[in-house]
Image 1: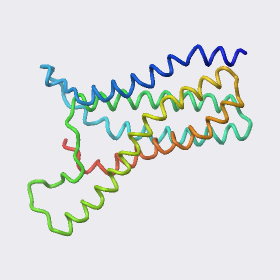
Image 2 (image 1 turned 45 degrees about the horizontal axis):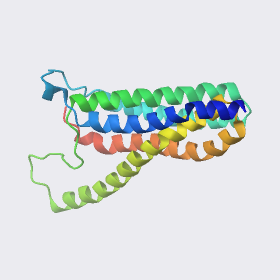
Image 3 (image 1 turned 180 degrees about the vertical axis):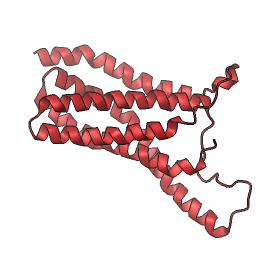
Length: 194
């Protein structure tokens, strides 16, 4: 009974947060502080930091699964809360970077020189791979929000049977999002303008 009331209590909040975060990020992604007269230095140091945050999140997720498989619920809980905190930190840094900096464009390297045909083909092929990874990363990063929140609330409610059921789906998706966040950064990093 307690489990259901706690889940019901948070269900509207989960829906609201799951809608508000992607919408806010999409809106803020297009907002540049300079367009509003704020003279701020681009926060160009943030991408490697938030990519690292994604990498650490992936490590924490794997460590949390190992901890729970070994029966260590306390360590599992600490690791999962840390992964959630890092994901929130990533989100703040990502938005801050994009509000102060122009987005990097894959393939926009050495734009002042004429590329050889083989370079164009190579960049074009890699661009397709990059875009596939990026699109799946973005779609799943939106989908993972309610999944993480539901999984977390079920743990709070001590509804561990239902927690385990959704965690089996949440974990690989969240891990994919964290790992592809690093991959996307590594692929786009040569194209950042500093």
